[in-house]
Every structure is written in C-alpha cells, then in structure tokens.
Amino acid sequence: MTKEEIQEWFKGLQDDICSALEQTDGKGKFHEDLWERPEGGGGRTRVIKEGNILEKGGVNFSAVHGPTPAKILEALKIDQADFFATGVSIVMHPHSPMVPIIHMNVRYFEMSNGISWFGGGIDLTPHYVNEEDAKFFHTEIKNCCDRHNSSYYPEFKQWADDYFYIKHRKETRGIGGIFFDRLSSNEQFSKEDRWEFVKEVGSQFAPIYTSLMTKNKDLPFGENEKQWQYLRRGRYAEFNLVWDKGTKFGLDTDGRTESILMSLPPQANWEYNHIPAQGSKEQQTLDLLKKGIHWV
Image (cartoon, rainbow, N blue to C red; front, side, top):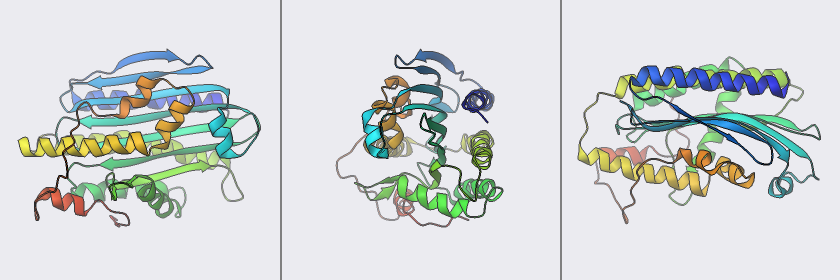
C-alpha cells in the first residue's frame, strides 16, 4: 500500500466514526474545520459539542509532511530527512460521569530515508470504574488483537499500562487498553500485516464506544458525581499536557494548536489534597487505577 492509500483510508475512518457517534448521540453534530500546515499538509478537525450524551469531543484527521523537526531527528538519532505523517485521533468527553471518556489514535509515519512505521492505541478512562464495562472493553480489544497475533494483546496492554500512567500521581489515567508505536515490518510481520491490524483497531472504535454510550447514558447521578467527574477530568488534562507524546509531537512539528489541544475537557477542577472517603465509590475507583490488572 502507498501513503496516499493509507491517508484515504484514514479519511474514511473519520467519516464513519463521526456518523456513528452522531447517530448514537441523537442531537450533537460535528462541525468541520479544515486547516493547512504552512510547512506542508493539513487536516480536518471535527468537533462535537453539547449533544445529548457528548459534551465535547473531537475526531481529527491529519496528513502533514515536510522537513523533519530537529527534536525528532535527535530522538531518532538520524541525519536530515523529510517526513510524512497521517492518522486519526479521537477523544470524547461525555456529559454524564457514568459514561467513560475514551481516546483512540491510529497513525502512520514515514521518512524519505525509507524508515516507516505504524502506531496507535485505544484506552478507556471511566470516571467511575465499572468492572463489567472494563471486562467488555478489554475483551473486545483482546479479540481484535488475537485475530492478528496472540502476542499483541499482552504486549500492547502492558505498553498501555506503562504509557497511560500519571507518574506524578502514581495512578493510571484509566483502565488502559492497548498502545503500540513504531510497528514496522520484520521477519515475522510484513508492512501489510501491520496495516491490517491498525485498520481493525480503528474500526473497533465506533461499535465499542457507541455500546458504552447507550448502556450508561441514563444512569442516575448527582452533584457529588459531577464534582468527581471534574476532578478526574483534571487528571486527564494533567496527563495530556505533561506526559502525552502525541501532544508533544504535534507541538514540535508546528501542528495546529486548536486541534492538538482538542483532547482537553470543557471543564475540569483541581482541589488541594483531595482524599475520597474510605469505602466510597470514588475510593474504589482509585483503588483500580493501577497497572497490571487482568480484566480478561
């Protein structure tokens, strides 16, 4: 496959996911913002706001190219080369604290010197951890991985546990999922093998999240749950601004700031030294925000 074919498939994925989310939400509509990157390329940012279920979310497509920024060349320890990067990135923040936040990213990167790879992942961040939902989510992701290679899920789940970790809080961002980066061809996997896997990960997003939206949207909650949701959103913002490599890559490559920071919630709170009551459902959630939990 060519980079143009990969780019076109990602555009179609963005279309399909936006359609599925609009249909499930029943009210919210995505508004498209087309943008160009002065150094080369551009993208389609699509944002949904004030829906029935979704308070704010974005489904972004980009395809950018040009001289590789110095920071990336230094990280890869290579000389000057041009780059091309394309992908779809998604974050959804629901109104209800009973509906989880979700993130997915699937991407392709190549350089003029012949280096290329795929990356991505999908992870779930419940405000309140529901073990039934966690098992459902991880089962679907594991099944997706297993259809390609039995080593993928355990390897990529561990990678997600380590990646989506708020080091300064010593807690995971949510219940994890899978994360992978720099998947290139080797003796075991061809480039086409990697691409088929990435496509299936992308295609899993809509059925998984629309199911969770429908299941949890009508669950009751009160002011206590809303305040906890704002605190958990604060944790989400901390991770994205301090640790997330995608945010750093976008800023380092002079990406569009509004699109990069689309992942941030519409409202988040910080409370000094907040400690939930022992035995509370908030404390029970914190107890499950740790690495190494085997949900399936």
